[in-house]
Length: 185
Image 1 (tube, rainbow, N blue to C red):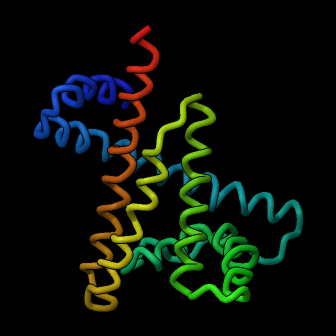
Image 2: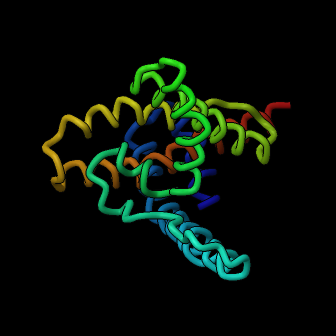
């Protein structure tokens, strides 16, 4: 993946869209494979091992996110512990304070986007907003998938497309910015 990210610097600087799309497509397969391996290793294996050791009764760490037909359904099913925490400590208190369902959901989503950015910025030692806007960009995508016919393959296609294409785009942008920051001195 590193050579592909490195090879994307020139197309990004020259705004060569066909080569940028080609680099994103080249990154999509290995990136998604790594993402699925991380999901299996962490959510399925590690958390279940820890639950067994700690005799933790509720072992619902994820639901069938791969069948999600809307972005909202994906975010509710792929990381159950975080979803329940956000619901319990952020969403419900906002609703009790009189915020509408949509406002409370968007505020929780914005906070999630901030923490995604934070978790990327610390290891890279640079603050950019690619992860933040990548997550925030899912709000209009959630509205779009909500408008599609319910429980059809179309919504699931959009969910998978966002999963497969979103991260390689972010990797390219962070890689480019990291390269520019560390070679322009």
